[in-house]
Image 1: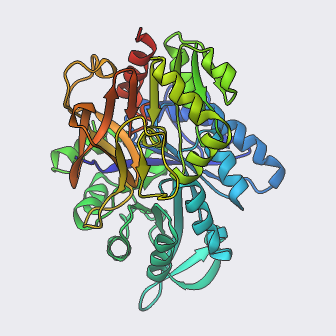
Image 2 (image 1 turned 30 degrees about the horizontal axis):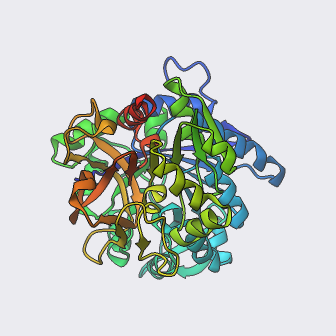
Length: 251
Length: 202
């Protein structure tokens, strides 16, 4: 049976983990490979690396990092942040990323998703959507949540799936950082709108939140950052809890 | 020496590193002479069937692979590299595959199930003696990431199946040829064990 995935997310800047990761017994918590290895040992199902490096010249650092991660951990990982074109995508995949996630550039150049999925296959193209509640629906934001687009998140998700995206990484801007749980309404609405897997993101603070996410929405995966980075819960704890509650997970 | 065919279609680093963990020497190459000087061959692959089939043809690798398989060299196709072993794929009707294993690659039908089939799913062993599965417990989880699945003509080549709506062939085995629809190099301990088994094949 296909299991639900738990995915820790790491923010990367200039090849280093940012947002203080606090692990006991980790010599260098800023080294993405050390952190990745630790999550690997905890039975994480995938990893997501979000590159927030501003400058274009630093892209080479990212590619070297991706190569190093691929050589050191034997689990799937996604890389996102600043992907501009097909060359960027090819470089990341060849360096060892399983998937790439595209956000801003997909809104600016909607044909990118279609071109990329034709070229590399849908299975490696993740459409990242940052959505914020409006009175009637949810709106898509880009540039790290700074720029409203006027796009309806449901319509945009459908369009992305039609264009060939293989998965949606859905972040609720309203819930992100609140630790009040995932935005179940938004997540379920997007899951119903598309026939591709959806990763819920934003708001995880307690074990129950993961259960709510999987029992009340069609999400196939749940992503979390600080909850894991600060060692409040290990991934194994989350998965054991879910298993007890009858959610299929790999342990 | 194990050749990892590099035809510009995706990840080779994890495969290479994993093989080296088990003492294998590897050669990443698209040069037919170099590849045929190796004792075993791995065809990895991420991407679209049509482009990959064309690249193999264009780079003179399709004929080479067929010859080397005929020469009974152990061969492992991973994900798209497995699909390419078949005669054709619904993903690219105009580009034939290598035709080494009879059958075709089909798209998952439209249903309630999300496509791509993405994530960790279980292996059900259909043949007890498959060398690739030595030491691997039935029901082990491996990582899948695909929208198309292989449908061999002969049931005898199906070494393991996986359930996603229907049961599809997740490992095929025909003489010296092995194919895995999942990514052993991304499947942590279970996947590494399979690669170790491949390294240890005579």
